Amino acid sequence: MTFAEELVADGPWAGHEQEMDLYGRLVGTWDVTNHYFVEDRGAWVNGTVVWTFGWVLAGHTVQDVMWFTMPRADGYPERITGSTVRHYDPATKSWNVVWFSGRGTIFALTGRAGDDGDIFQDGTDPAGRPIRWLFTDVTADSFRWLGQVSDDHGATWRQSQEMLARRRK
Image 1: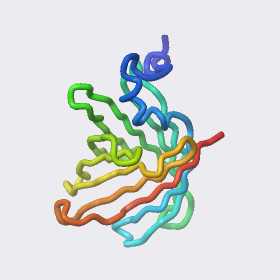
Image 2: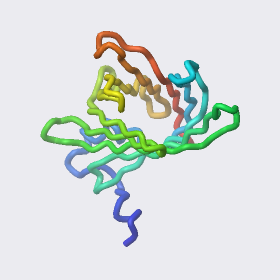
Image 3: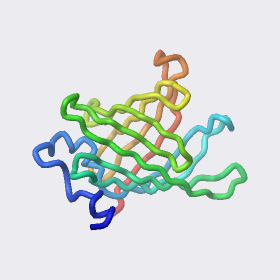
Image 4: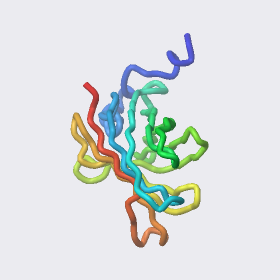
């Protein structure tokens, strides 16, 4: 068997389908508009993303691959990638979430169900600031993703990114 055949799973972990559906309902490919704040430029930037989710590791994990297209500082488009691994822990009834950037940045968060079908993820950024990543307004064909950061240890939050996704047909 190949590495890809060993990695990819056909569906969720048998006997845990309900818990796995928190992220499992995102499995598929999404076209995304991306609006994010670049701190070193002090400016908001627009780009696009192709975001693909799938089952891996015998269905215990949902992994995604993201291809971002965004303008470089000189205005020309640039494509970069990243991937998130979301692994369910039945002992804590939560998800371990790790995002890896193609540029070497790593974020570690904990994921759990939020209100009204939302997904709440919290952790710290590489500088040690608290972060929240939220999937909101989740339907079968769309969702909104929000990135938030706190500069005062969680007393207040500011938005740093918004992505609007539509399922690719």
